[in-house]
Image (cartoon, rainbow, N blue to C red):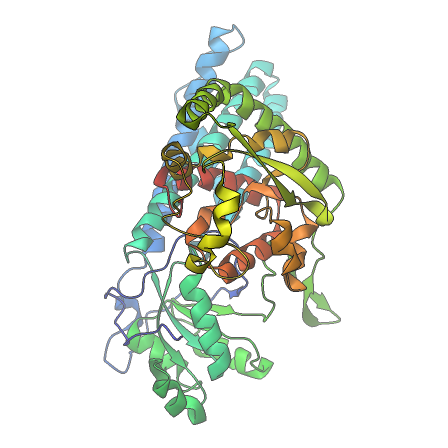
Length: 511
């Protein structure tokens, strides 16, 4: 159902966007630097629109990075002096280190406003800056013939890298919290034919962390009446985009798929000089980020789509990461595992571990372990509760399930019932991150596209975990799982693990 309400000015609150992650599938056209000429139909100059939050956000990032560089140098110098490897250096070396760190991140487009607030470009810029900082350290130490300086600079680079990543993760979380409250959103107009516009607008609304607030649409003239009848706010025809941008202070123009090349070229020309970003939907559902590249072929730019990665060194690296992190998890959580085992056994005398057959990689079945959160006769009582199923698709979901024990309610709210799956990760039947492991009965009802979930190892957590868990519909959970399958990377896995920690603390969608 169309979600767009009445058109609102740039300073008004409007549709809220839920937080999430993830990867998008809009191609970005970055406009030239804004100019200050021209007026809108309402008499407002484009440069008098409310300042975009991204400028303030970029300033905070830059300041935090400078402080990270200063602190990293001071801490590295202190550590090396304590172990007898460091030497005293003038105070301005710390200032130079802070400035150099900011310059290295900036050279990797780490402060580019169109990249802030979503995706992994911010973190990637920090990682690249860290590698370049080590190279700079080697060159400086070689020129000065000072091995002690090399030690200090390399350690400072690693500390600055760690600080830069943590700063971005913390600021991203703060930003998404503000966006859930209707702040720091980019007012957006969606352009294209009515069916595609409606679909894209709905996707932007449900896209976690998109940070966009759709204020209206521009459709072909012959579809305006139909669009208004369907509840959409129409800001004009497809030739009226520039005036709509000026009139409503729009920061983003999102073009739906299926538009002819000459229209996109002329649209890009029409908004030149405005502080407005142009996004183009390529029409490739669930394919995004690292798999998409623009490549020139004899002067003709074409969109190249890489195949998803289901084998090779990336899978090996993922397995090593699983083994290291799950081993640490078992070691740290051992006392808690013992306490929870005793609590479950003492509550009703039944087994503490619940074993269930699930379907894993390539359709192979395996035994999944969980702490038992239901009464021992839960499976036998399932049939009598099917009429109260609140889920969609083959997955049974019930908010107030009478089969859950008192201890089980606590385990589910805190997600502690999932801890035994660390042993599934150790034996290779599960991964830390991946699609939800389905039941055999669910797999029997899968349509062909849904079966792509089985191309990767199922996970303890995933996009579904950080995007609402049990509160998601069947279609939403499938869409998120397929998005992960098509676009997974090690960086995305680490980001999901980080966000899982906060999702568990917030207890979103856990019941």
